[in-house]
Image 1 (cartoon, rainbow, N blue to C red):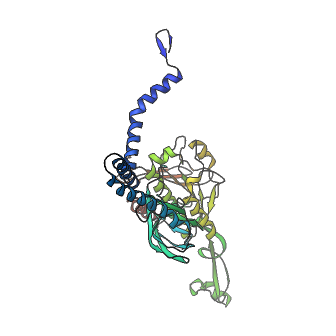
Image 2 (image 1 turned 180 degrees about the horizontal axis):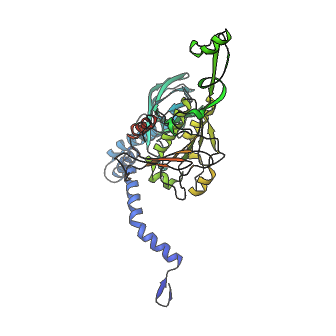
Image 3 (image 1 turned 60 degrees about the horizontal axis):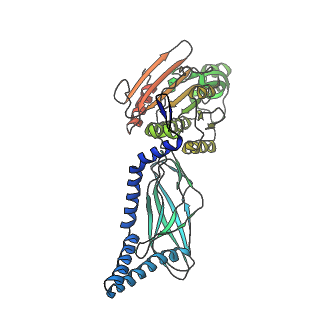
Length: 446
């Protein structure tokens, strides 16, 4: 110990010893519970009976040799046979589809082949339970139990797994587990998974607020002067087979003496950018798990709803190069795959840097920003020539949301842009609240 003036400074060795003494009660309790679990297990109880029988046979009476021999036989059969049973098993798991939706049942077929001349009784299919978003794995659980695997021939078993959360399934390598006949030990063998299934985030349909697009509620900016069937008349032409009678231009028909129809404008798909602003660090995930998952579901719903009406939608996951489009069905599948596997993306260290990188180009008609909290350094003004912005903030259940109990809204009208912000609470009522907001916007309500 070194003393400088009146302040004492402990050496690293002394601090290490002090920390060890402070943690000793906690460590001792963990060790005690661990040994207690081992002694109360079937294998521990059998070993205790064998040890007690050996002690009694050596000290008290020779009659104690009988329970000792019985305990030894029980140990040999109970420890060796599970490994012998699973030694010749080979298993492969194939899913019925490669992609499922959150909340559905994942269906698959487990094919097991026994290469040995003896059968396997009470073989379970297990895996380490789904890893939580905070990184803590749960206990092992039986996915299915196969009563008997016959010798020297294959057997198939159908599995149904609940898709409780988005991501890849199975989360960990499943295993065949056998503890027959006494359950003293459990022997395991891995199952080959041909291809892991992808579970997309939950999605709900929305009545989209078209009035938020550039050009207002009439949507005439989504029309171009090309031959089409909507909008204003841009010219006339001679009648062709298949033209509708309502498009006939009667004054020109009477003047020219032949059937003339009106040429109208052609609609084009509006361009929408959806930006998802969430972080992937473990601390943020653990603290705001519900809000984060609901933000991903909202992003999936907004993306799919705009795609369903023919809009050209792009999804931005935080980096300018990480954009996904809805132009083709393959692009849509890739976008939903990216949302399902968003946990594997690198974390966003600085939100202000992210906000500057994801600035939309001028050709987007609407910018939808979905986030889990208000961002520092972000004024909320649309970048470029994007005239409208819709910001959806998903707050945790414990947050104080202005307005009514489930939502808070604000609308800012400026000279050259419009910014709408809706704050939603992350709970089971969020889909209904968001659908109500979209209906209000579709009806023209502020």
